[in-house]
Image (cartoon, rainbow, N blue to C red; front, side, top):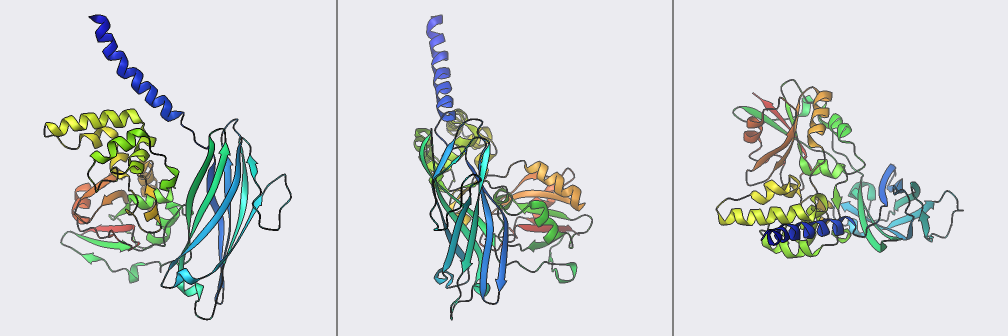
Length: 389
């Protein structure tokens, strides 16, 4: 009898141990890609963007090859921008090899704990009808590259935004708050944010000349996550059998209702936690208790936005929730001298304060943000200043 009970206990333990081990040992490349040091040059009607990408290998012993690397820049802005021609130059800065001048990408090994840089030049060509300096607002660097190593051959796709145009920075004299009974609201426009932006610098640039004691600054959770680089193109996600099996059970409007959306959560918390949370959540629904899955699976389960859920061009990506939101709020609050909150708000009047500085008036925020002053479309107003009356 005891041996039978022991089998019932051991079998699930072995299954979940195997599941976690296979998840952690799944083939993947350690290479990391980031962009930096970009400059935008406008002369007359011509526009040129120059900068660098860095390919880094943090693995202690694995060597990884990059046999293919291509950039497909996309211009974003006013009508007809898709007709603007772009001249693209890619030059890898291999430390031990001479530079090719024919534009050919020579396969290169990124050794363990080393990195290499790639020089990028984008020139938007002017013609008689199209003026890039007037029409283009952003450039999306759509990067397609191949990683080759012990894990096999993996095709990856990543993107970075290069802002070209910036809104006028508000000051107290030209800031017009919306008046309500117990508070005032000011949605604040920014440029299209991305990994080139530091959240502290963005907030200081657009908010520092507007605030006064007692104000509360709210920041959308998706813009924070985007600046932290927490977005993934679905082509980089390989759904497991667990993701394919469970995703149809979620509501069709949920970001976990697709295999890639659910797999992005599994990649964060592990398959065992997702399965156990799902089973308990299912039992809870039968008993009339809703929301158990999201409580047990962790905060990221509610924060993941599947494709179409964010502002273009991030609408092509799965955006995760921000990392360390409380630390972000505390740091910003200390620098600005006012309370700061990271929020998730929608057009249905649902307001969730993900994190805030210690003394933040959350009941006031819930009331003030119910109308979703930042909007859910392409307003580019990720910052909202709440001023109690």
